[in-house]
Image 1 (tube, one colour):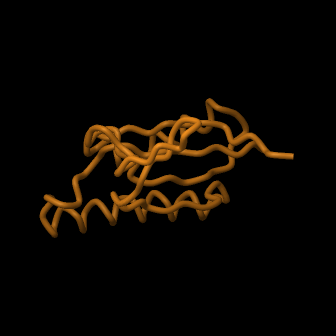
Image 2 (spheres, rainbow, N blue to C red):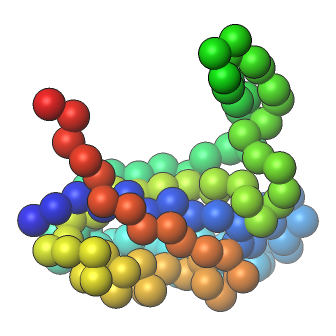
Length: 113
């Protein structure tokens, strides 16, 4: 088994969505993630706030916010186990973020040794 990171970008805007829509969305996420936990696929994950900073270049230039556009905001991540990239992609297809015009980036995690 390999490990993959699913990065979630965009999706439901938590600052403008109604409480009912937020509740529906959270239930879909919890159902999906509970399924991943039940089948042993889920490793870890968290939702991210929109607070942050970016350090870049040799001078470590500091800018506010980790994003340029709302659709590019990394809203959260989870790490999963999968046999290969194709299986990880199939797992990612079940993510509720697609119902809210978001995207999921799937990348294999390379072990640092």
